[in-house]
Length: 273
Image (cartoon, rainbow, N blue to C red; front, side, top):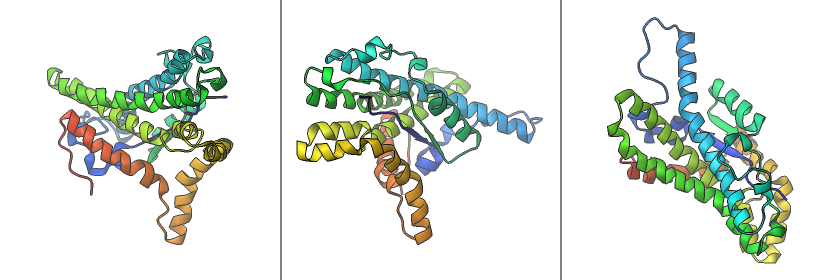
C-alpha cells in the first residue's frame, strides 16, 4: 500500500486571505527601475514570486513526506527507509509533473490557485508493529510536521528586525508563504477522506463497520476531491447556489488559523470579514 498524501494545494496570498496579508509582505518587489518595460516588470514579478514560494513549498513537502517515512520506520516498516525516502533531499520526493511543471504553469499563468502533488511515501502497513494504531500515527505525522513548520515560521518573524531592509522583506515573504502553505497542507490533508492523511486517521480510529466502507473510497478519493474543488462550484454558479464546499472546509479554517499564527508572528492583521 502507498502512503496517503499525494495532493498538495496552495492559494495566492491575496486571493485566499484577502485583507489578512500585511502590506509589508506584498507579493512582488515594490521598487523597479523606471526603464523596465511591461514585459520586464512581469518577468521580474514572476521571478520574485517564484523566489519566495520555492523554498517554503519544497520544505513543506519534503519534511511532510520524510515525516511519514521516519515514523513508519520507527514503528517497524523500513520500506521508505530502504528506498531513500526518509530524507531531507527534496529531489527524492518531487514528482516532475505534479511538483514542478503543473505549479509552475499555474504560477506563470497567474492562476488564482496553485495545485500539485509529491510522490507518495511507500508504507507497508502490515509490517507495522500494531498496524491499526500505527497507521494513525504514520498518517498524522505529515500534518503535525506542517503545523510545526508554520509555528517555527511565525516565530522567526521576530528575528526580521536584525536583517537589512531588502533582505528582511524577502525573508518576510518567504516566512509568510511558509505559514500559509503549511496551514493549507495541514487543513487539507486532515480532510477525513482516503487517500488523504485524515482519511487514514479516520480509518484507523473508526469501528470496523464504518472504517471498511470509508477505506473502499480510496480508489475514488482524488476524483471526489477534484469534483468538490472544481466541478461542484461550477455547477453551483450555474444553478445560483453556493456549492463552494472546499472554501468552507479548507479556506475558512486556514483564514482563522492564519490570524492566530499572524498574532504569534507579531503581525497586525485585521479580523476576517
